[in-house]
Length: 133
Image (cartoon, rainbow, N blue to C red; front, side, top):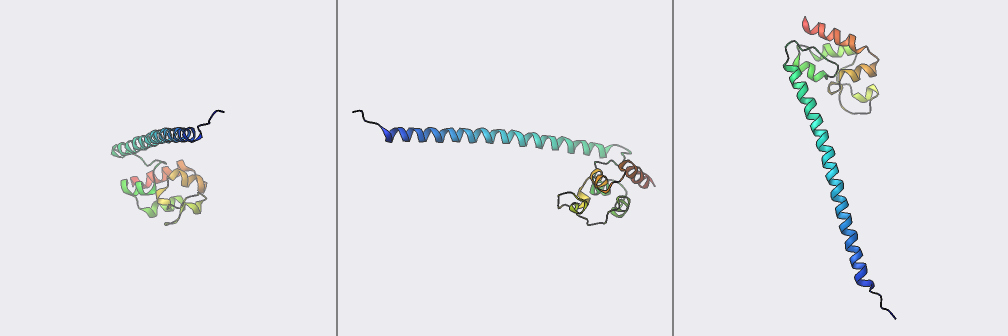
């Protein structure tokens, strides 16, 4: 009768399986690194475009801006912006129906207008007219 080498065969199969698992984990980690690097680059280019926009002379208030950025870069107070948006200071975004726990001042004007059913163009016009006064 033929003897079966079970011990060595099982050990080799186990090592092959472990090496395959390590290679698979390495591939997954590599693609995750690529994915997050692309996301970081996209956010960086968006941030740079915002920085250059604020350096332009007579740059108007846009709907992609947050309340904080408008207060920081324009001669407006938070109270004036909250009044135009019909939102009280310290309101959480979740109170507007958005699943998030951040404060409204970190949310874009466009998102607030959408959730409050406001005409965003009219709000931008009013904020820009207040800014010029």
